[in-house]
Image (cartoon, rainbow over all chains, first blue to last red):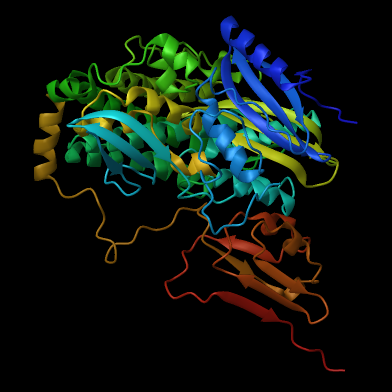
Length: 116
Length: 358
Length: 112
């Protein structure tokens, strides 16, 4: 049982994530980063937003084989971090503004998905 | 008819390799595509084999210029997992070394920026003024750039009275030298002609593009993480945010010059208020849970996420560095400027690519 | 006019750098130069090997050897603080060029 946790809001599906992110943008929140962890068989994404030095976090579980939707249409700065997770964890995001297709950091002859 | 020119990984003005493919129409940039990956070392995977104490040494070596605050943020994040209270003298030692690191980093940037538009003698003068700062850091901690001043539980070395007197004498010299530098960077005709009105970002655009640090504060947003509640020692030292309204390269230069004065004032206040006592508390057990810690590095806001699962190795470590957040803003400001001004615009975000790619 | 005075002063003074191989500055007291091992009290417990972040120390208890890879060492001084018998110290003299890569120490076999 985790003693120290960060406060998060759980999301059920991709459409709910997009709607919440759009509401936060209209509210004046700033995009800080997104964290990806391995959890059971799939991955867990934590989106972090910040306004007036207070954080708001959204947690979303990605089942194996599912393609999460990209938020780079709402916040442009999300495109770099989503490309990084395409390289390192083998995820595929749907609809990124600029897609490096798994070659942002890794070259064709390097080990595939090192953190997966 | 557009041509594509590589603003290559190797360029005389860049301290670290980043590649931008610039699409040009005659002389004016119409599009830019960054490509990274030249210094990716995969440091986040080291937590599988090193325990949570040894990872401090790895986190410090992500970048050579901003190394003190990487180590301090990591140890504060792990201390949140243990719910530890650090003695006050340990916190004051960390703040003094962190602010000395900021002074040397901004002096380094001023030198590189002057070299970007051809003022080579000014480049040498800025780095000459930086040498006493590095000598003082070597006398206190044993190393010029990678200090290892912070460990989980507090500070690793104590400061004696001679060290504090030496810091104060050095700060008096550096302050009078920065006053001379300010006259050049802010009042010189050539500097103003080349930087005023270049690559302007409005207040709304800088906020929504997710930028951090002097790039964000040069456009009128008063956001500086030294005002947050997680590390409230800066309130006792009388910290004030430095903000400029215009949003162009000239405003970002002014932010960094005035932050130098602010850091010197913070170090003097910290030395005069320093309490006596222990510098570290002993740590028992293994970390569990998750925690997020953010601090203000010389280039902006850094976010650390740690997750422990009860063993002595951490389960996940994620670092988001400030240059990672500032690079998408280049895609928004580069279109519309001439090719000869591209090095100056890339330098105003203060690119530290080895932080970006870890 | 501060910069103009500075330029004229720079032309007339001697250079700000030291002429290195001929003038060498004495190292500071706290400078981390090199690791010194004293085998007299070593009990080959292996604590220094466990603490070393880059895995530069190798200790074998059976053969009684202690080996340090000098090029891998980052001078973090974790081994200095962790040794229960205070066998490892750090000195502030800079290693000369051409230093050997390994410092190997084998305890002399006790005659039976």
